[in-house]
Figure (cartoon, rainbow, N blue to C red):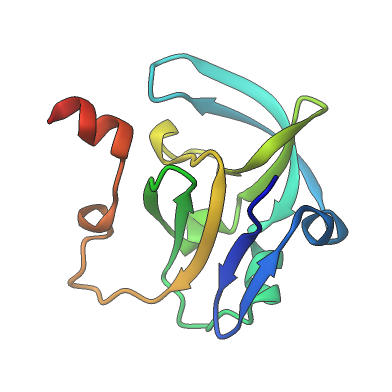
Length: 143
């Protein structure tokens, strides 16, 4: 991993692989449906989202987790859902080249690969988080 992961809350932390590896980890078996269609159940090891929120001193008013990938994919996951997930560092015993957002039950195209930024955000109830999302590979294909 060449770029650190930026984690934003009340504080902003730049987490390189060594720092990510030093945080508490958990293991989950989660099926991820890829945007291309196949569904893969894997054993994931990573940092619980709650730990990332603690590191950045996220506000208790956080409504969503905003996650950005290296290729500028940008998604919003409702905080209640996000807290059941992790920033995965391993898949089936193999270290990932870059972290991945893994949250049980979310749509596969929102399970962001190559995560470079995670932000705890508070959206107004009038804001549709889907309208704020970017999916460059899909958006470019549709253009």
